[in-house]
Image (cartoon, rainbow, N blue to C red; front, side):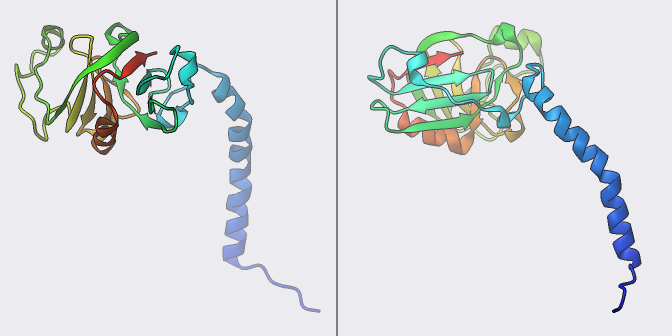
Length: 193
């Protein structure tokens, strides 16, 4: 019977595994605390599903719930057979966030952008007007809500999705706002929570 002689490579691998074991165990122990901590950093993986029944009396038309807490937009078709969820960007601060009920009043492919006076007050370097195009912060499509200056729109800056990064609007990846744009008619009911 022959005994196997350990190689240098095997010894190094087993040593590295033994050093990593305490870190893995600590990480596993801290996971419940992270889930329970409401101040834990949120990102696009923090989605939670919504039910339209928790927000509206009826589903008689296309319905949208934009959840600023989990940074997700929820879409339901008028008959409830189609449910979709999209990652979003949300307003930078609670002061910029408008919550409540509204509706879609118009839609635009290739939106232009005119920063509000409060946006320009916060950042005087903003232009007074920006035509449609790759530099436009509204992306490729915009869905306008009944609240002035509040939109659901795309973004060319994909780093913004999943973060607090807007001046009040809800932002989606351009390919996803294009999909939502086709699904959502003027008159769709919307709630921001």
